[in-house]
Length: 212
Length: 339
Image 1: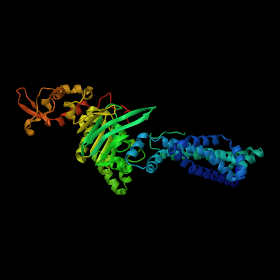
Image 2: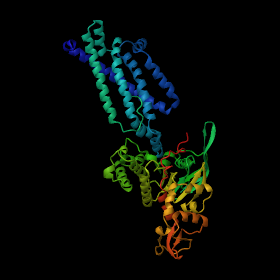
Image 3: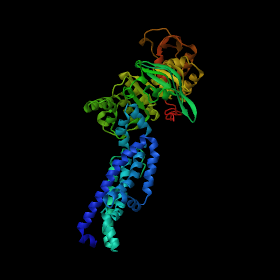
Image 4: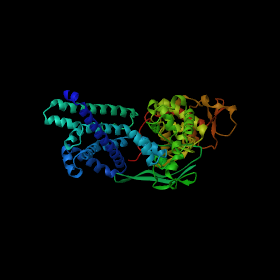
């Protein structure tokens, strides 16, 4: 804890960068992933190729993906965000699909029979009922991004990974811990709070709990 | 009024053509509760679902108040027809009041007016609004959810209500209670109701008219008395009599249930001995055939007319006694959604 005591400002700065990196990534992941997930439940033939593509991208090792992107997006935060968003897409898209397709057929039949349009069914029935499952995906994506974002320091994206890499260069385990412990704490905090948020939207026994 | 004119529905399944509904013609009068009954796969649910276009007929024509449903805007058509399904089909993320007020919401009613309407209807189906309006469906029993489903179907005051085995998923005692309740509600609101069931007891208890279907075809359409007295085919006799609960009717005599002779205007009609059981009377009526009168007289041992029983009441008693068949209650209906 010596490093933390002597350099609280640096740890706080890197912690802030880390949170920002994760927040931007998850926000973009939601903005792209949820509409994409909705799209592939409506345009069914797109579903397999999209899920396959996000799945394949997910398996590419992060360091390799960073390296591949550098010629196009350069060194720094931009590249990191692009790569991290790509990773977050798989769970977010998959859980959006699982959430929407988990809505009971009887419920949808009632919605149709009442005279809801397709848009109304989505807004008033499918999305609200899929929300807990979508949130579960966001939670997983957030926790994973917090971890992977530490590696992004290798390409100059900043964050807590910066402290860890410095510590590795200097074989300074105290410095490594000063980066790793806050990152782990951040992941646990995100997991816990998003879990609570998800339960607040749970309406009991209706939709499939896919994704967790 | 709803008319079905030579309506058929076929679909492809595993490379062969299945006739789910085969040349059905039917008129459903305004203010009538018309039961569609038949075994699983008889096409009764598909027939009903074509009225609000949840299914599209492959041949024939369906009109509602003279207008061809295929020419109408599908969303508008559905909003003008109440729809009740098994387990109520309630939206689990909305409160009871929000569920009931859903169609008014789609129709753009103001919030306070929706709320008022929801509370009014909850009262009608026997769920005090103060106690139930703000609860969620999962906090209600199956029977209570079903009542909410009925209230929701009535919310925008549609002239027509379609009910697809609405009481199929509740226990027999609750079911009987809901059936009686529906009769009371129907007397108050007087809708045109199309009611799908596979429970003959339910059909007799509720139906003004009963359309019996098998293998996609309409076997017989008529009043409960018609089905009892003039069964069109042996299938009708078998179907109306197959229920094991029928035996209970052997122990009730006409004399016990007939209205006192003085309480009804004198009409012609058959006279049956009061010591006959309801079951025997049913057989006897079927043997004698049509009389053109709405009931029959009941006599004592001396042959004196001591009571009168209308076919409507007679059928309702059969319905009461038959109850939901243990063997068929809650059975999943294979023709609900052609896969």
